[in-house]
Amino acid sequence: MKRKVRCGNMYIGGDAPVSIQSMLTVDTSDVVAAIRQIEELKDAGCDVVRLAVPSMEAADAFGKIKRETVLRHGEKAMPLVADIHFDYRLALASIENGADKIRINPGNIGEISHVKAIADAAKERGIPIRVGINSGSLEKDILKKYGKVTAEGLSESAIRNARLLEDMDFQDIVVSIKSSDVCMNFDAHKILDAKTDYPLHIGITEAGMGESGVIKSAVGIGALLLAGIGNTIRVSLTGDPVKEILCAKEILESVGLRNSGINIISCPTCGRAKVNLEKIVLELSEKLKEVKAQRVKEGQPRISIAVMGCIVNGPGEAKEADIGVACGDGKGAIFSKGEIIKTVSEDAISDELLRIIVEME
Ligand code: SF4
Image (cartoon, helix red, strand yellow):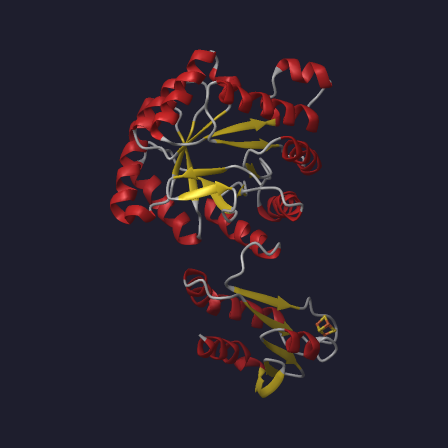
């Protein structure tokens, strides 16, 4: 089991559940915009959020943002992570201004005494440091040793930089290795996981946008989680970070690490379907948004709803699910706990399923 590290009001590693992280896309110095995005991420289900701190102005704004989120949410305020590159003074200012965690790549902080200053300040405040290694920032000697960026090189760099902090008597370390190459990312984590007990922050960096980014992230993060690797996850997508949270939640649900909400199972349809199944599923998904969020909030067990286009696989899937519909010509047989309870017209299917789900609560 990995070490357990406290980050604000939650833990990473040990027996803590796998958490979801994201990063603000707005300028940290724009306090109003930053707080708005933090609220959106929190509402979407984000557990930890990272803010870029590229200047002293941003470090000051970080303090204002931290104070405002604590004012709004008290102990439930989402932990804020300061993302620092190059200038150790920005890390010290962020720690002073209430950062719950610092993310650095010790290699680009420069002098050892500067890294030590960050470690000492973080230790005094009792906050962890994430050592973040990216394939684009491997040390020259490691690149020379392996000839190019490799899984071995990435894991060696991560271990080297984490041990640097340990040698400074700092133990609250989270490690991340990020590569945009899904296979290399997987191999590097396998090596790192076998060699260390640091909690691991996993993700596919620069995954891109749209379906391609979602699929790369799902495969890269999902494969690691199924191998038992990863304590906190970040889906990195170009665009609105709220999408990252929705994708991260789906990944965790798909690998059985979150067991709440609602799972819609729907067939792809084929020439046998005699209803507009896509319209029914879209309507149902939209109508269920609030109910799903409420179930997640209340920690209610996940329920599955099967929406099937015809009688070939429909009755079987619908029976297996908690609730289901097996469609016929312009109508659907509604199943609850394996039994047909009624048949309704195509237009009434989504409302009828919604009504049953709400009554189940
Ligand atoms: Fe086609 Fe029916 Fe299977 Fe849906 S359930 S894919 S409509 S055979």
